[in-house]
Length: 507
View 1 (tube, helix red, strand yellow):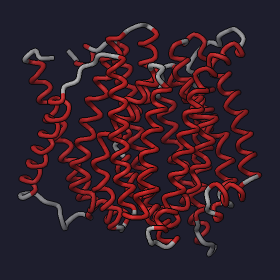
View 2 (view 1 turned 90 degrees about the vertical axis):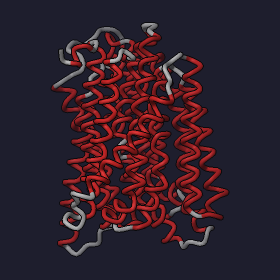
View 3 (view 1 turned 90 degrees about the horizontal axis):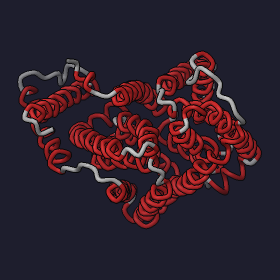
View 4 (view 1 turned 180 degrees about the vertical axis):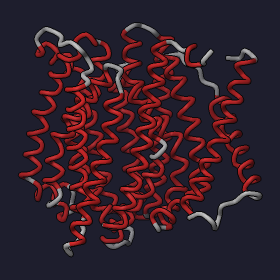
């Protein structure tokens, strides 16, 4: 019998959706890597740093008018699927109204925001472009929330691919046009690429909404009746995300400032910030395509299980998220420690990027755990808990920025990231344990995968002494090939032990 046939239809649908989101997420990460490499070689590390300084304004707007409403739509529609279309139109009207107001506010006050809020006057010319992208992001987010709430992930998954492909294609063409006409390529290119991506994603999801609607039939009733219940879910999320984005924005603004206090020039400070956020962190976040996909799908699944009073299903979701977050995180520690330097220097031609990757390797298990467990807490309606815990973790990290960076440089921020993610993951686990009794086995989830990773690395190094492509292939391709081999050995050993345990009747 096919093992998938043993699963319930809900579990099969969840697995299929996770695999789809994971596959498209990985494809987008690969495309995004090429795009990041292109930007780093086109506008440089300093340009990347300035570009990332503009994002706090967009992030705050997205938290207010899009992200919180998407989550509320996903959660509320999952529990009231029959009224899905009515709820969607209510959320969309609210989101678009706010987004147009915020876009106008940014465009009219770009110089004030750049000089007083971002403390970087040269960002003023980029802010209007970011402002124009806000309504498109809101439209895209609401449609995705509708599809996620209806447990249909194809359109949101493929919209990510459409966004990346259109952005990359048009930015490459625009770069060629500017170069052919002797015009300089500046940070405007990256900001324009952001707008192109948001327009492409919104257009794609809107087209799919017309051709492949989540619901075949329009439900009756007054759409305004869904406003208050939706607001009751969205407003706490909105307030939470606004505070978190304000804190994250303050962090992003203070990092270059504190780096200058440590002795760096303004240009060097932006360059270091660009290397960290534009080169090293994308590598660390690359595998999170899997855990992010799980997190997005866990929220409506847990909300539905709670509405049905199914504690067993909630406990199973928690155990599943813990197991695979740790499996993935432990694998990434080994990979980034072994190949961090090679990846940083071969891809971005920057030794500092490789150094950052190796330090941040230890972040992976806690980052992935915090993502999935936080989504489960939100699905259980504990948004206030996740807000307070995320705020505490951010404040801890900001403490490292304000106190540590002037004395120890950027290393203090890396230490702060590790400490805050560990703190956040432990807080989330503690809160879940108080709500639901779930299976937790340190041997199975930590010791065994760590041992199997060491065995996989040992097998690979032994075979590499006989078969090596070093010196034949480019460094990046050689490293990627070795990472694939280690991952295959690791996954195979995990599967072998799992099957052996099934045969003995332990699971």
